[in-house]
Length: 218
Image (cartoon, rainbow, N blue to C red; front, side, top):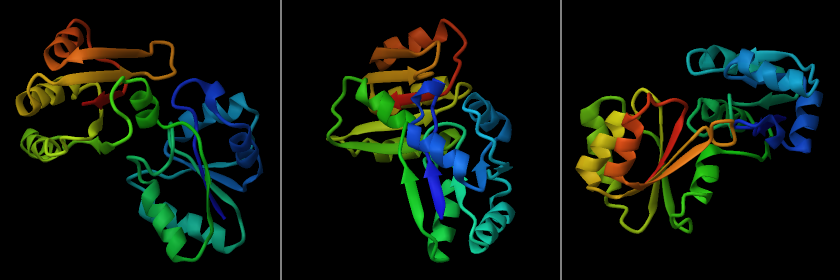
């Protein structure tokens, strides 16, 4: 069967006992970056073989993993951090395995969007998760205008450090000076949550070079 295993988004202590047990006992672990996953497996003395599975090899490697399942092997899918299938190519493998008739088992755990949302101070009973916005400004602003229609839901976005300023500038243009919670490096040494209106958050970000992956909550 195919196990979808959530791994820590920062602090290695956030993995579950069950996740460690599964990773130790499957036949292979498919991961986005074997170097990053090896840090986790070495920490917990997990000796299961690793194989890469990421956006640019997902077709060929997906066939290889399905072949292993056909041979009766158990496969664990992990992402670099958090829950596989959330803003990563895991969805493609999961769909293919389902269509081929294999059992999919979730081993739940951390995900950045829920962790950041839970401490944002915003309403959590209804929210929209967008993931990463388009890289090009025109497409990004178009999508933000569509998201503005969600007047009763909290909106959650992911963003990279090199695009966060441009994205927040577009948010300000489309949403106005709206309230924002901006979380980065959740559970890591330099964890930070900045709360305020869009203008004040932008001013805070411009003081130092943005680092780490961001969760933007509107």
